[in-house]
Image 1 (cartoon, rainbow, N blue to C red):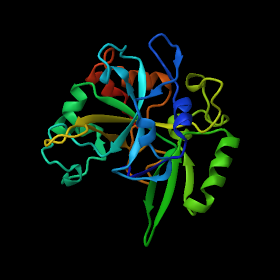
Image 2: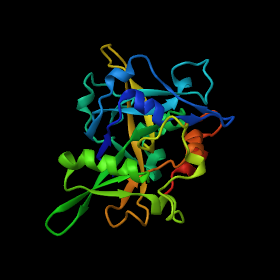
Image 3: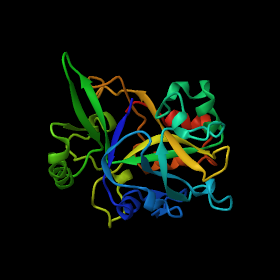
Length: 270
């Protein structure tokens, strides 16, 4: 499972860090939806019910927008289904922060958003996982491979906040043959202006819930999980479904071109 993440970039940095490719292969930088940038607060310790940056198709908000045009939104972690009848989202009686990818079609809370094309990408510096030991738990911070300079700076920034967390990139599981590289490949090269931390891109589903008594709609999401890759299974038996590279992100978000059942094929242990 995934119960803690970190996302420490400022709103404008998030926008620059998650440039995406459209169907024509052109790089684009998403904009923040309405005032959503103000709802997002950078943090080394994001837990369920907090607001996180999410990338999704602009078509979900504007029916006239191209499906492959993306936008950034702040969404609440822990999916509140559209059919939820309480006026307080905190009264959800079961956890929806994670959803097992193999069970999506078995539960209405997740099946409905999937079949409606409500797919999203959750952005984070990385996620935390705790390795169970005999008498204690060892926390690990898991992230995409970074350049040496970027990774060193991040570790220095975390020293006083996260010690003694063990840092672990997922290069062996995502790119098994890329040991000589710091984790950069051609497909995932971002536009030249962004040289900072490479954000982890996790597959998710979202829904929009409006309180029955009226009020502002609430957008919320769940992180999809898969069996842990060989590189991580000694820490935990599950991990977020990672979308590696611009093409996987594009295909997951493009619900017009990639139908729901085909999109599920992207959810693999890597």
